[in-house]
Length: 112
Length: 115
Image 1 (tube, rainbow over the protein chains, first blue to last red):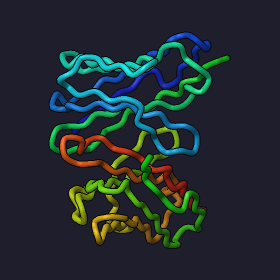
Image 2: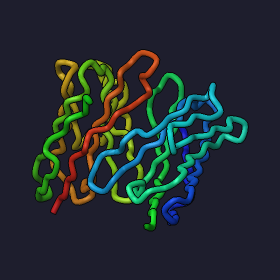
Image 3: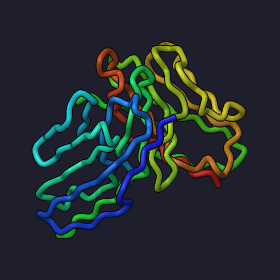
């Protein structure tokens, strides 16, 4: 089955700096890659996603890039703000199963 | 904005007791998922429904866990008897179907503590 590795496990940045979280996946048949933000005591919130026919996608301060050849994808957050502090999860889904396999998460701390 | 509803938000029980969690997906979403999230880890799929039918329950510990979605709308996940190792966050998610069947929206979860 699919295996998703996520790095780093913790990340601290100064407010206004950029943050990058990286994930690799094992199943070349995976074609959908969402990112979730989870605040303490809450459920994961979908913040951005990308499909395998696209190399990059942006939404305001958030962007995701996908390299299908290397089987890795990354989340980029620019101009970080204290409210960006949370745990971020990447996931991958294989066509037909619609089931998500999650990484272990990255705890992002934005220091004011 | 439509959301997935879950109740209760928190549940404390003693081992060997029965517990049940309820989920109401976003209106019109045919696919419903139950996940378990252990503290410090990502969610892991327990069961997937398409309408009222189970698509995949291969990761559901069937000796003690059961899930149903009788009318293809809301769903219940039950644990009987609960064990100490069941302490976790139980998350429900739903998908709109069609070309976005893999896009999942999560509810707030039920935090279970087994004493």
